[in-house]
Image 1: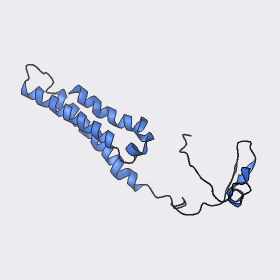
Image 2: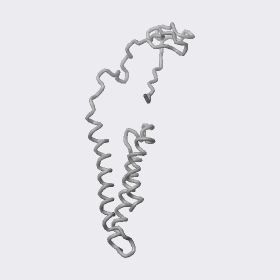
Image 3: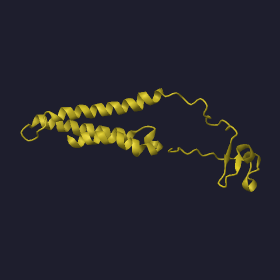
Image 4: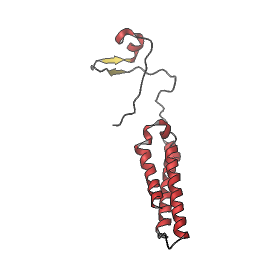
Length: 141
């Protein structure tokens, strides 16, 4: 029963610290749902044992309380993922897939300004004009 409740509590924490880093578990948190399901199942087995054999397993009061708290944590996580995050407004100014990137100027590794149009025209280092690969890193600032 306690192990199930602790798994239910650990599921959102592991999603926010570990699973959110990888697109396969960030976009659809299947691993977090699996941990939530196993935790709720273990908690339900614990409650069943507490009521089935009250002489051996004490906790007829703590079991339902922990099961209810675990279900509330699971429901809150599902609400946050499926409802709340879908209500965030879309980024209308962000470029779409296949759309040309707007021209911009950023400093290179030496600090001198470089524009996207100069790289596309062939004025960049090594004269490799014509194609540019843009990589956007999600920053942690």
